[in-house]
Structure formats: C-alpha cells, structure tokens
Amino acid sequence: MKILIPVINFGKSGGDRVLSKIADELLRFGHTVDFISSDASNDPYFPTKASIKWINNKGKTTKYHIKDTTLKDSAFSIQQKLTKALKKISKDSYDIILASHSLTTLPIKKAGLTHKALYYVQCYDPDSYNTAGGFKNKILAYYSKKSYKMNLFTIVNAEIYLNYKKIKARGVLYPGIDFSLFYPKEEKIAQIEKKSTNNRIIIGTIGRAARFKGTSYIINAFKIIKANYPSVELHVAFGNPMDFKTQEGIHCLNPDGDKNLGDFYRSLDYYICAVYTQFGAFHYPVAEAMSCGIPVITTSYYPANESNAWMIKSQNSLDIVKQFELSINNPSLKEKKVRQALCDVKQFDWKKVGERLNNFLNEFLDLKKQ
Image 1 (cartoon, rainbow, N blue to C red):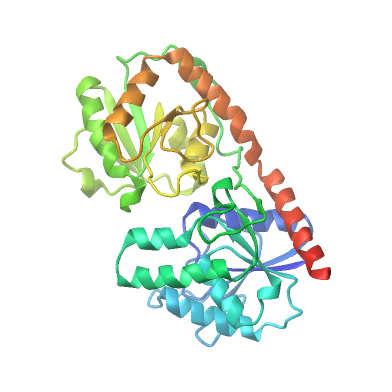
Image 2 (cartoon, rainbow, N blue to C red):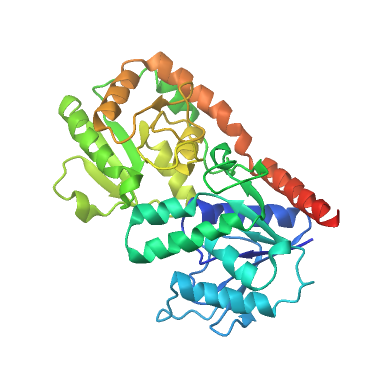
C-alpha cells in the first residue's frame, strides 16, 4: 500500500522518532512511504529510509530540500502549506494518510481526504498547548480539539488515551525501542547490590524548560540529597548550563543522537522523571532508562509501576528524596526492580511495533471496503 505521513516539521521529540521508525518498519513490509513537510523544516533528526516531499508556500512538492535559514513557518502557515499540497494530490495517489499531530488533521479535512486518514495519537495536544499558556497556544488548543471530533480511525500510543477526554480510539500501538542502542551494561546490574554510598552517585534527568516537565522539583530534591550525600552529582541532558551555574554538583550534557543518549543513561546510577501531565502516558526517557538497566524514580508514566520503579508523588520534591533514600538503602529490592523493568520493556521491540501497525492499517482498509 502507499502511505503518506504529513508532519508539521521534523524535530527531536520522541514522537518524531516514532514516525521515522514506523516509516522504516512499513517499508520493511513492502509498502511505499512518503513524508510531506514544509521546505522550512529541518532535516529529520531521526533518520528515515522513507522519501520526503518538501512543500513551498504554493503547496508544490519537490524531493529536494532547499535549506534557507531565513525561512520560518508558524503552526498556522504550515497548515496552509499542507492544505494546498494535499489538495494537489490525486485521490488515488495514496491508500492511507497517517496523521500523528492534531494540527495535521485539519489540512487533511480541508483537502477532502479524511476517508483516507488513520490518526495515530501520541499525546493529547490541547493539554500541552494550554499548559504552555499564552493567547496563541489557546488558539492552537482550540483547533487541536477539533481533530478528535472528526471521527477518524484512531489508534493511540498508551491505554490512557483509549477514552481520554475527546479521544475515542480503537486500539493501542506502543512506541518502540532500539535495543541495539538502549541496552544495559551487565556489570552495572551485577554491581547494583555492591554500590557504596561513599562512591560517586550520578543522578540523571532529561532537562526541559516547560514547567510540566518537572525539572524544578528534581533540582530542589537534588539540593536536599546533596546535603546528605556529598558525592552525588546531577547530570542534566540537554540542559542549559547558564541555568545551573550557581548550583554545585549539577552538570549539563548534550548526548546528541540515540547512540550518545544510550551512553548517557548507562553512565547513571539513577534516572529521575518528575513530569506531571497526562499521567499514564508512555514516556520515552523512563522506558529508555529501564532498557539500559538504570533504576528509575518517576511519577506515573508507562511502563513504570511499583514492581519495576520507585514511584513518586506529583510536584513533590520531598517524595523524590524519600524514594531515592529507599532505593539506595535497599540494594536487593533495587536489583529486583531493575531486572523486572528489563523484562517489561521487551514488548517495545520495533519489529513487534511494526507488525501491530501493519495489522491496524489492514483493519482500516478492510473497514473501508465494507
């Protein structure tokens, strides 16, 4: 089958990785897969074997990306580009249009192609816009909500979204993990029980400016932990060093690319996540840290639970400290949780994800024939 994937732009988020990887999996099944995006977008951060159709302001497409750093799209202008481009596409050019971002569904509707659209929801976008605040984001949240009222064939990336607010979905397609990049050091697991509190302890997190990412609560917890464990360090991936220049023991790193990101996780003794929105959603850093054999302290995000992680209360620095101390003082339980986590992440093998998506695509086409 022929599949088109419209994107607002190519970025560095976990959702962007998923699109690149599932495109490659669909190619493995012999399908034709094309991305379509603005010529003002960056190249894909996560490489893909799928072809890319770049579109200009007139909606014309080309296989070649004319990079111009002076070009910049807004969320509104890219929708106009996508609408124009989709209207130019022959109705027989593609069997399925795979939408993943809520704002890509509106151009599909305006182009009269909703009957070809399969909607893969990776998060509830209105929540993100409303949390970010501001007049523009309120408008984007308003338009984003419209996507869930279009009665598209919808699948989601976590059970929480099966019947979440305006979302009504048919099934779950969890994201995948590349276990050739996110894997544990066996000696690290073996040494968990032997770890001494007198040695250097490295706590890690993915630093994000958005308030709901919870980085501030981790920083506050770290200050308390540092007072009791002087050898502890906090390593913030993708953090801004200027934000922590007065903080002793905090180091910012830039593990660019999945290979370096895997190395970052394996360098840690603990990974902490304090995100506090859409609890129960799949969270890549939690799953990736688990697949690297790192003890995880986190708020309620899939696949974390009491058997494979140390669960913390939302927006609560003191509980982060409490769970850290429980972990460091219970090495055998820590090892048990890590080993359980390694078992629990096996479901995210990309081949399994690709097979499940292919089944959803066939189900969608079968329904259209009825």
